[in-house]
Image (tube, rainbow, N blue to C red; front, side, top):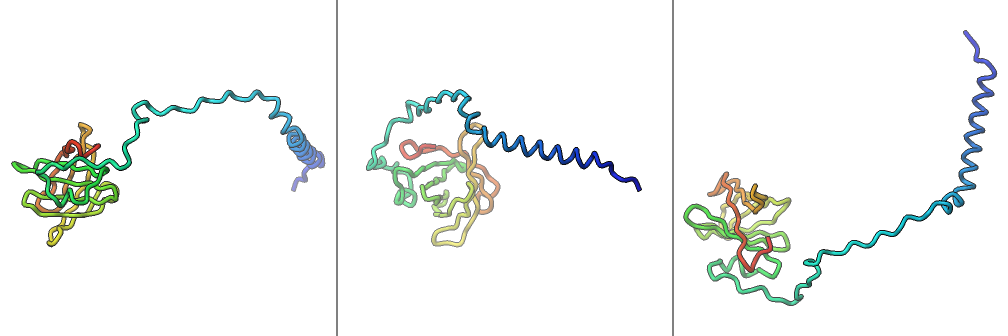
Amino acid sequence: MKRTSPWVFVAAAAVQLAALGLCVWAMEHWGTLENERTPLPERPAPQPPREAIGVAEPGAEPPLPPSSLPAFLTDGADSLTQLARAGAGEQSVAFGFYPDGNIRFVDVDGGRYAGKAESARARMREVDGTRAFTVQIGVASDGGLQATFTGGAHDDETFPLEPLVGWSVA
């Protein structure tokens, strides 16, 4: 077995002492090195867009709902509620999207459904009934909203949603 030369141990100790000395020197001069640097110029604070500066009236009442909408959707509506209509064949269905995450839906046969949105998907159950389905709200290729149904009378159908004027910001 070959023995390690003594100069290797001396060189290793010298490297360790040099590293320790460099660390001590850097810690002693840390504050003075920072003071020698020129400070960066302050960036101006970003300004909000001009159209975003307008403030809505806090107590503003929402406009009167269209008379063709069922009371089931408009009873709990406030200024943040978004109402939408979608065509289902010859007739139309209506959705209500509420700020607390609730979704209400009125079908072509007058069936009333309610559900809670979780990640743009809601399990809708019939009010005073036993029917149920799942609806997923997404963005269509044209940039508008769409509702895709799983289960129920509209199984595997997708309807584009049309926001109702005065009741939606979508």
